[in-house]
Length: 575
Image 1 (cartoon, rainbow, N blue to C red):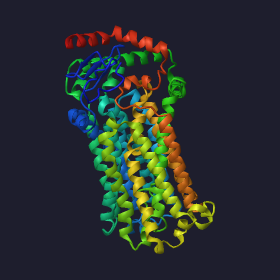
Image 2: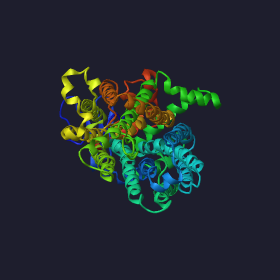
Image 3: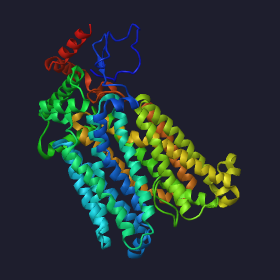
Image 4: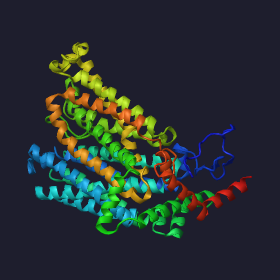
């Protein structure tokens, strides 16, 4: 079985080295009959080597761009003069305007998992784009506050659907050695969307009349239309889903087009898909149908066989969302709601204290954080498959914990600092930041350090892991549940964070620092390394949870479907 991608270095000459190393086709066969393959090197070179699959992944990630743009643009829209004069929203209404999108996204994420499994990934993406654009039209041409709320709710369904469909589709068209890099494009597109949305809204804010906010809200229709057309006319069908539906010729044509070659390795990958699909069909034959069967399909995610994977997906999204909310759209008092939360809650106050006023604060704190996060995603996209998921998660969580702890120390009140006497002298700054500009700037550095660490670790990997750990039979529902966890946590933490900040800013940041430390332990001891592993071989990564009986049946199917024969033929050619 293809348990890992082929390394990019020279073959090992040790006793345990592979007996056959067919470099021209990216195949390695070991003495115990296990094998591995790749279509090229990992990282940037691999992206160039798999240019068509990379192009399709870039196009599919437009779903993330729409998601991020909506987040970035609403921050400026809510503080534009014409918008405020037209609809003077209360704090409760502002919160509801944000919450209604998150609830819509929760519904979209849960609903479209089953749609993607039943029909196709591309059709589901098309429908999600249509829903998203309907919501965008309601927002753009809103003449009443109710239109705006309807638009946010409907658009939220599309956003939630696209937030799980794009990484799901990308994972299924990618080869093992670059899968992490391609799925990480989702986070890259999200952050790019946030930056574009923020800056477009910033530059249109002084336009007279409703055009100041209608233009930036209307621009989001463009990416939605582009992705909808691409889903119909450009993106190839998922070869794995075609195999599951028994369309083997179409699956082969799609796979050959994606890999840019038709040789033994593509035949191996296709046969692996057929083995997996046969196992799924045999399991489905013994399950119930109808509404009970649908509930049973969801219930499989919590069964002993898949529980570990479900926990990885759900907890990955929980930690990602907690960190995102520790850096999410909330500025204090009259500052703009954009960028990143609890840190931005204090960020403008800190920057204002060192002499920066008005728009400069928004530029440096809000816009700057988006740019830092955008820059941070680039090395993650390039190196995630070479370095692996676990090292990035561990390093990122450690750096984020340190950043939160630093800000907690600097932002603590005297009453809180009395419990930590060792830091008492440095914890008195928040009552007089002007006299302690170095401490203020230290907090700003902490904000950007956290942002970079998040952008290179939990930001992109939060989309990668849930999209690759589930087997094909429950992948759509598994990714849907993980993404729904994202939006559910988004909503709940958004309600709790402002209250925590009112009670104790330092306590809030210490809470987030503790969460980062827990994430470090979780990523060290509970998260498996999935870099370079074929989607069909995740059972091996999770310690053989499929069981000895399933493993034996898989071996029988490999013989029956001719996978072992193809492997032997390729080995004979090399000899």
